[in-house]
Length: 189
Ligand code: ATP
Ligand code: MG
Image 1 (cartoon, rainbow, N blue to C red):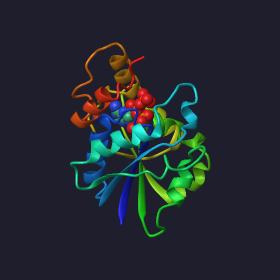
Image 2: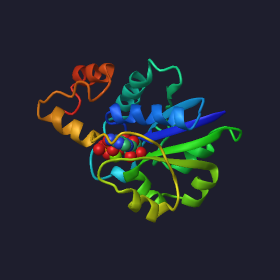
Image 3: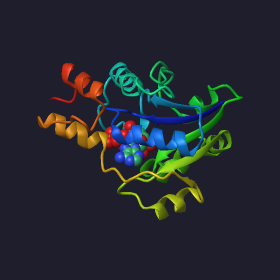
């Protein structure tokens, strides 16, 4: 089973995550794209992250209409900090894993816990993202597989900022996620 893994805080999941999943599915010839909301995200200790139950629920809604997308609860269900290597090692050893990350995340990959083990267990593929030059990524991780995705200048940070300011986030997130954010009044101070 060839499986793409797309991890993130998904606070909230937005269009760029879905486009990344779609291009990864096609270009990497995968059978599944598994979206994994992070548990207690140690890299975001500087801000409050929405409860894992909300982020998992939104991720489930985001992937619901796509047969080859699924949302996985293994990180939000785990106690304590989340390390990518633990997640990779929790999949069936027969699974062929491809870790897909945005350019910003890719540039920091070598600092991730047990980086060498990560790249031994999974292939890495990168989607371009505004704000991080390809050269910066390649300087950090060397030659890497780039996926062909249009640059989308969308981020969870900007979406939360807009929601907090009373601006619409409709169409920046899937419709069901937009409704969920509204009903639960997420991101409003
Ligand atoms: P935040 O602003 O809260 O960090 P985010 O938009 O970066 O939110 P994450 O959940 O942190 O979303 O990202 C999950 C993964 O998706 C990361 O690998 C990230 O690089 C990638 N990603 C997020 N947004 C984009 C984008 N607009 N283009 C390409 N990759 C993206
Ligand atoms: Mg991010």
